[in-house]
Length: 451
Image (spheres, rainbow, N blue to C red):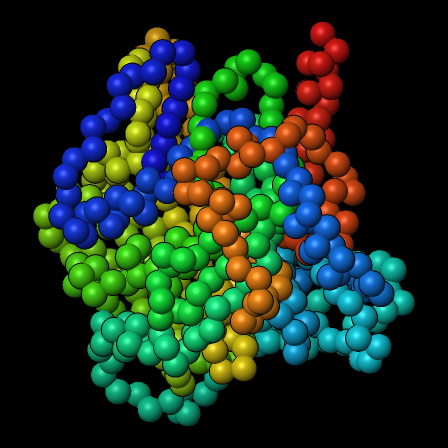
């Protein structure tokens, strides 16, 4: 993550330092994000038409809200998919989802899975015209079924990485994804941008060098208020599918040299999709480094040692080091303070292997101007979900059409927002607050254009 902030004159860009091999790897990952405020829209017509043609015949649309069976609490980021297919999505922060898929002409089911809950398989009512409620119960498993013995947490992480070939795809895949990024100034949305993308990923034993992402369709809306002229650009956002896939791209966290830098401890057993997981906490060792590390938890399948979920947050105990890594340049009169950089990466278990399912990244920072009374807090959130997947695709993606790590989505698109834009695409449903924000931004744009 690197931040480029503009408000008037630019200061000189922070000089890059010469790092060791590990420092360079981390620095490369961090520089792939650049924050900014001009979000607009784009349609890759040929690719968008090709995807639509694969989806627009005899479609079934199922909407609903997923809740805790006991408390009735709405559950966010629940994995929702059609069993026997690669089609799926996740619930939003309000627990809501919509899933569109071709009618197979036979009984249709939805499967729900969530950390700490028993999975639930429900038959779809084709005639239902209103949103349904779906409930999940917290899972319970008998500890006496598990042989309790001393657990070497670091060994489990190393073993999980040694078994990547057995537990993840050994063939290339074409992944169809929905991507969204938002920028908030205090509690107010000032930009919202979305895209349908295609991500070509090689085998999990080949690294990410040949992995590519291209944009099929996108749209966005941004505040016209001159007070929101702070420029916060997000570089390479849709490439979340490649560089935050920590199993395929261990340079960010799980490469052997990095594993050496962390302390690991066994937290507890958890369940995901009715499979028992080791929950392994990790935190940085007290070592002298010029760059920050992460802390978090890794969930490892007890049966096959596959990593199914990773949550990690950058260690903010030394804010100067964090800022040095994140901030590329800023106005001389502004003070910048990073407050949070966190990631969530989940994988879906299918036919004995794990596949990338959902990625979320959140970045919070504070801008304090020397001649202004109040500081301003900003939050940038990016998330993507794999909505379908094709194994051994016949089509390959060229470098020319791919989205570069230095690209900014706003530079690729034209500005508009259309209610029917997504047609038959599967997306992450917008939350009520996001829908309200879009309405407010559209009104502000209309008002601005009339003056």
